[in-house]
Length: 185
Image 1 (cartoon, rainbow, N blue to C red):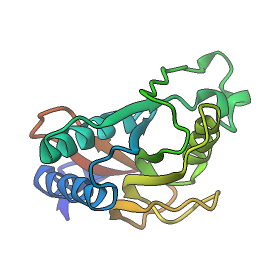
Image 2: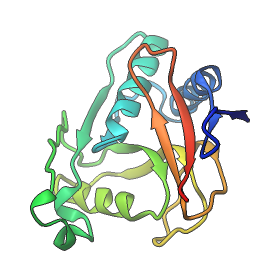
Image 3: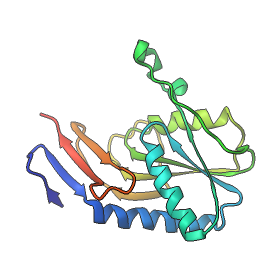
């Protein structure tokens, strides 16, 4: 584990470790989904989209073929929508083909309480009836789950206290990508 100068911030995955994990996750998806002809990968707004785009690019470069990918906005299915007031930020849902009878891989950066993924599942049902839905997350915080949600593909599982915040920094072609934990005092 690499420590940062700021004692409240520590790096748990550096760029090299993160790159290795991303390639492993892409290979796991290829192992299960083969040529992806009946599969779609969807990034969950907002932070799952960048991760989805990276995974999508890795898979396409390994398979040498185009695969379906898109994004879903969960804003209207959040269980705290009544608390958002005018701060509600509605994103864009982009689903390239019908979800009916397709295998869906939802992609998000961090799995914590499970509420975001529950909202993503509700959103998906508005767009069709998939054959199967799987979850890929870069970080599974494991503790403090409020909803019984479990990821099939996990980059790294960590135990963290409730006061800590996991920060995933992913930028396209960046050598500074990393995952950090911020301890709030």
